Image 1: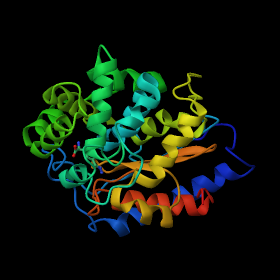
Image 2: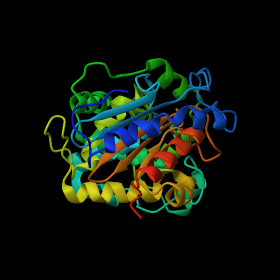
Image 3: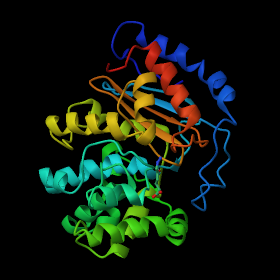
Length: 318
Ligand code: DON
């Protein structure tokens, strides 16, 4: 394990976290085979299913890791957390005229949910919500395809973050449902740009590849009132940070959000690449990854890892 010089919160906490991480392999092996790798996106179905990574990034910069924490994977819907932050930076409160802040009742790519809500997606983390947010970014940025990658690179001071064109292309080829969502939003007047342009930026963002270590560090601003402790840069205001974390807690795990709040109890965002990025406000971020998913699209082993760690370090916000 990689440990800095200072314990994160209290004397001995570092040793405790390291001891907890040594429990993770057993948790992972016990959960393998209970879920299935996302197979609706070409490229994702080829990822070896039985692997895991976990990284913890503390406010003071201390890092902990276990398993394949440095292995990059497709961040998929985890990108929606960062695009929401970007949209709030670019467009401020106007974001909330385009998407709601309530959990969705149906699957994350449901068309009928958007129709029932008359073109206002329930929240920014379902696909339709992310398309409306991406549309805002396209309207406000001269380089919308690169803007997220550039922000992520700046957040952790690296040049090693790329969008995988093979994943983005594959998704565009099979993404008829996302296209349907785009056209439905357009029909309701909730998309200003061309559907094709918004979809292509959306796929580029979902296809960004990052590791648990990179994701945990890049989200630290959400544990630090909106300021990245790595670079000192303010990303969003303290109020917006609290608001993003609230929407993550209620909507970030889709239809599994209630169960996740019950069992784990911290704001988190999942992606169908198997990653889950979780925030412990004022303390740390935790990213867990393992490709096999439950029916809601959330990593089975990733949730178990988070449940174990959060319980033992008493990090639930409830
Ligand atoms: O548009 C899609 O369906 C994917 N690019 C992202 C979906 C996703 O990650 C949902 N998360 N659990």
